[in-house]
Image (cartoon, rainbow, N blue to C red; front, side, top):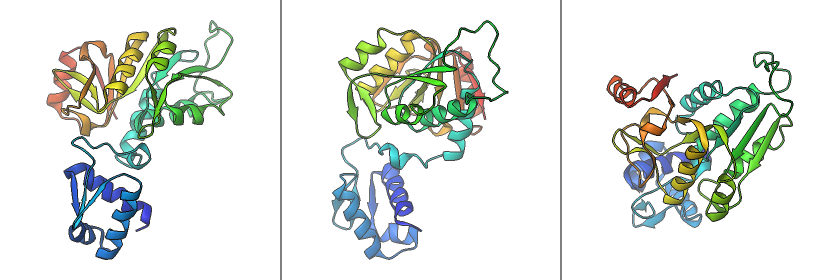
Length: 269
């Protein structure tokens, strides 16, 4: 197991329980305790955890993995979800994307789907001349990936960057989003609750995602089933604002029924 894989696993353990013990982690990863101690020391230097006697604990009460370490979680599911979400976007539309690992996969799926010469994405004869797609995003990593795609017009918001998710937030972000109209927004979320709706860990990111939803004609939520029934700190919007939710097949029939009853179309892949 490489160091990067060990770090991913250690951070996964930390996210799940809020703490990790050296001896238990060494057994789980089949490496020496000395190796785990070195890994924890290096992760602590990057401020990804707090070292304790015999192990480590997460920062604060609510722990959020930086995007680069979350990218491998539920990776196959996220790729299928992203491809299904990309299929909901028509040529020439203006698409909003907030930050996150799943929406990053959606951006990649859109780039492939609308690549020049792809016959499976016909452009209607009535479609106006212009880019195959316009993407509005507050995520720096998504903007960076799509900026090199000549067939996609990429619009970025201003704002202050959050290092954990690469998202731009704040008044500058609000100013730009308030001046645009979106055909569809694809939102990544941290929780889906039947009563409160969709949620995010941080209030600043939630407020920007809420504005994305307000500026869009259609709202698509993309999330793996592990987020179902989970609450986060800040509410984005209620289920009544969501048109479609794309998730994996591990979602329970009871959850599907509750979402459908709330008027949300559920697509499982």
